[in-house]
Length: 430
Image (cartoon, rainbow, N blue to C red; front, top):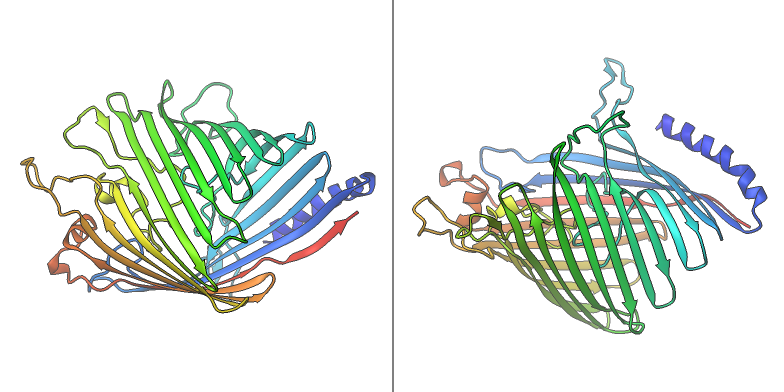
């Protein structure tokens, strides 16, 4: 944290003459401290009598500066992520920190070529539509940002983004292997049009290339559309999204997959009742040269497939895909207190072989998950959130998670308490 303060002090020193030079500018110093205590006995993995529940506290600390003018926007944000007590420098008389907890969460600059056209480059969040392909993944302590360059156009009704990324492990004299599970290349095109205030339609194309070897990169094409009906003055909420994916997974297997999501809800005073269905295609075992399991890439998981995060990758259902019908209930007691209950009914989308004979399949029912959250707004920059989740697992899910009857499976229970503070420490607006 000391290093972060020194860096930001240097940034303040650098930006101070710019503030004086600009006719109209905004400068701010912002902080975020998020502390989350968790009781895990069934988070990501089914519990048994052989396991003991985990109890810990995780903390995310961010400190950033923003500098905005009519011609340029700049944002730099440093981040420290740790579990309480994970200090690597410890003596009998005290703990003196750790060597590997600091990183740069965001560092980007946006230059306005015209009032509606800009160029944005650097490490940044990418937020498009429902976050199915690219998301900022805020539930995780580290979050998710992307090293990318974007050409952006935006007016009152239309926004268009074109961009991409080329990733390497370091600056090198010649081409070198990219030893990472991240994509080597990424290309992006996104268009969103507001038909009227509540109704919008958008389209996205995402090209991702993962390196198999220095001379071989396999590319996935994902194209999708979102139709959204949402307005603060309307009690009705509707969302429809659909994505199709093709390309190459490796030298011998091609992709042919899809994802469809539909959600609707209505607000009755302070009460909201919603329902939806997500369908993520699974692999057809009758095809040997094609994989029909949809790759979620860097899209949101926790937001859609349950707090317990049982289904974050295709392999978690043995590539059988996922059908996720759900009920979403919200109640706003007042401006301070909010309650939410979400119930999921998980099913396999595709038959999954349970043996090598070719005619025996797992039952498709995976069970039900209940996620309850309560939020208390303490101040305009501080909120407290409490959550509880449990799961009613089936024999199929027990098998997928490697749990047998002899392991004596237990009822999953997960509890968290999260305090988030986002104060603006300092600002200048001239």
